[in-house]
Image 1 (tube, rainbow, N blue to C red):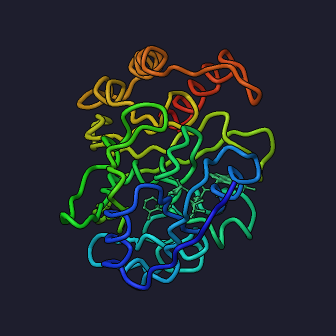
Image 2: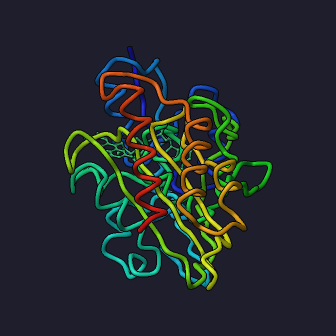
Length: 278
Ligand SMILES: Cc1cc2nc3c(=O)[nH]c(=O)nc-3n(C[C@H](O)[C@H](O)[C@H](O)COP(=O)(O)OP(=O)(O)OC[C@H]3O[C@@H](n4cnc5c(N)ncnc54)[C@H](O)[C@@H]3O)c2cc1C
């Protein structure tokens, strides 16, 4: 099987190539793609190497919100001041793979790889991130929480690249929670994960909440129904119980080589309780 690499120097060149050639596969850090290549699961194709596209370069601009250029890596977040402004991003970055993977792997690649076990996506989704897509036809922005349509199915056309990821500014007063559960503390694929944020008022009423889970559905799940159970109500033990019941309806974990369905259900409930009760 033959694989080739095309290295455009500008976004226009990259988008022209995507528009005119059918068999191109965007490549950023290649930390997912090289695994597929080695496993023999990639059909012959030409990799569209994005590393030289200056418009996609690693960038973290904080202007109220945060914009991550498509080539921004986990390490870029870990070594920048963004880690103080968006702590769940730093937490996710620290728990992804090894330092080598963190230095190559990109947030955009994590989104486009669309693994239900992705660790970067839940943190971004819990911060209400938008994905900016670019093609020859123009640009559009869609909320990351509505980007996935099914297992490895996304609202991205083959002629589109993820150009950037945008996060709104982080308002004060929210409490945050990020917990990944794997077989080991580090270098593990998530069995389940919760990235959550909650805003309470002085009467112990939930003003707003975000609950995002990995590895319990065909794609990263924002548990909007369970958020709805919590929003506007006093956070009592009875409400926590109702939220856990709702979550059990909302998730669809499978049993696989990493875990059983029963374990995932139980531990996912434990994560939600831990978040809400502490
Ligand atoms: C040893 C090892 C450990 C890992 N550990 C973890 C972990 O703990 N948690 C975790 O979440 N992941 C982990 N990963 C997976 C991987 O590192 C991440 O998903 C990473 O973010 C992928 O980014 P990348 O830039 O390397 O993507 P690539 O491999 O370059 O691409 C991945 C996919 O995204 C597409 N793509 C990339 N950039 C764009 C773009 N700008 N526009 C459109 N499509 C694009 C590619 O076509 C491909 O389909 C691990 C991988 C390895 C090899």
